[in-house]
Length: 262
Image (cartoon, rainbow, N blue to C red):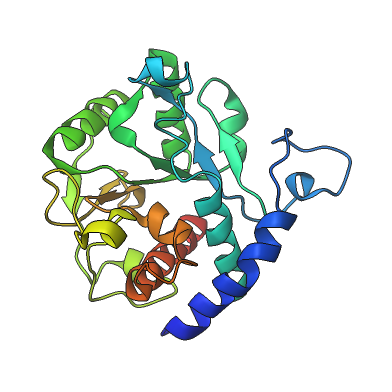
């Protein structure tokens, strides 16, 4: 399938003002007895991981400096595009999940950003490991360069101590669940608008990577030296290049379909 770039940007731009206003965040992230957007039961939930940050001085245990970057606009713009471009029955608002309870097992697809900042207790690491072993899927995004990679892997080794990271090839099934993504590019953050630079720190080359379980299923999809969340968030800005936004949406949708079917 080939994504119409014009249709995508038009859909997101047209729905942005109305859709984001309609999808105002509510205080309740769980299920209730009403039919508000945060309480609608669906086959898919966009779930964002809130985690303890190494930058505790920037807002406490769940620091907005780390896990909530681009939140909630990036999440909601992605959901707007998903509802336009697929028949996935997804809830129109995002779900924030943490590792301090078994509630995470109700949300089998999770997105996490700024993962160079994450830290886990032993109990949290164990719960995330069990989540992945039981069929969960984790997509990580928006961390850049050598130091960020090492910090990310420090946490990942605590979760999956025997895991191996591999570089994904264009022919991997992950890139062909909905859209065929053979020619990939580095997807930059909004700094591109000011600088024309696609990279951050020393993350000059995009790294499409993954961790698999012992059956070959991808359990962690790694977007290193990229910032897909910014591409979703800034898709309605005419100064942000449409090719970056289009690819970011395609990648996200492929990852969701993979996570739902594997």
